[in-house]
Image 1: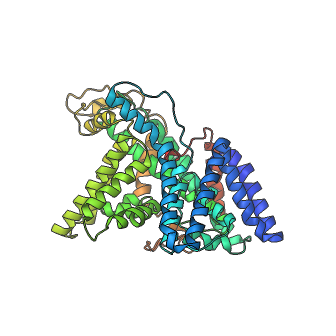
Image 2: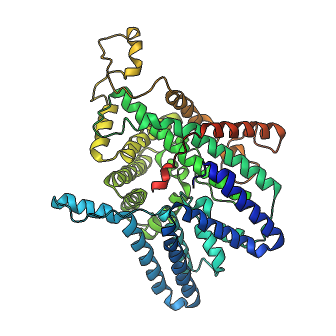
Image 3: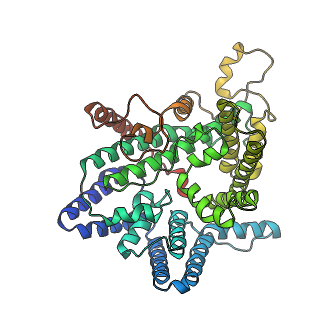
Length: 489
């Protein structure tokens, strides 16, 4: 069930909200159990066969954490057991196909004829529980009721595509008395509509510009390659940022605040700043539970940085393109540290933003491509090595150009559709427009650093009318429900 589906908007969400608010008033202790049950049903809707897998993961991790809290002297044994079980589960479902395919390629003959289906959200609920186990071992987590822990792991706004939750942010909110708050409902619905608009009105219309360029053997030329690369760059941003906004808004309906996941990453002045703004909850996890334990900045920091980014790339998917993407960002970060140590930070801000964005676009090409060969072909096209011909849709403008350019190219980039117009709108929105936490700066969530806008969201009739019209526009545009891009990770 997708957030941008009629079944979710007009059936699941109203039923869950009504049941939660009724129980919060009559039987407060049952309200949390109701929300946990609803979250499990939400997960089971995708494929009920994987619901026992999720429940087994929750039960085992809760049991290991309880053993650690009871017997501190044997804490490490229970931690090893829990980590082994989590990593084995993730490794089997997410990487077994990749491993066997790599072996097949090396040997030149297939060794297996099965295909393991990846359970939805396995990376997110596994990482969430790994962080909890490590904090229990460190003495940073206390004992919680099983129903609270089950809700913490399976909470439906975050379960499918994040953010990666931390127990200290969520458990205290689940333990306080539930109830209906009009301000939370108003803020939550407004943020949800912003996220829905990002997904339906910005991300989805860019898809027709992306798929043809990233198809195998497409051989895109200069303009086509840049259109496809930029379209995917902004499609991914508005798709994932839109999901995160929807998750934050949905959670606020229940009076629960999720952590921020985005803070205008394409406005970053350097690559380190980009990773402080992009997928913030994952960046925090990689820093606290991988980079720091490896040694952090204390020793071998460049090695630790590269290894962290390589594993972060592999987390996104089982494929060499994801490893290469993580390696690229590792190289970027290493070069950034070396440049900063040598030259300092006295360069113009616009120069840093342009260079950072260009590096990110190049890496997204590798991330999106089905294989490294296709990625290399698109990058050659972006460099002009595949030719300088205009796409078919721009051939009418040939008389206005000088020189002997050819005017043949990929015919399926539709310049008569809305894709190019949406791309032209998406670019300034990502670079210049205030983000969600800046618009709602008088209410949580809010970024630590934010621009001082002359206007911001308030519970006023004008804002209500504007968001109502925006919601109607989204509904009329939901003629083809599409999955979120991060569901596959």
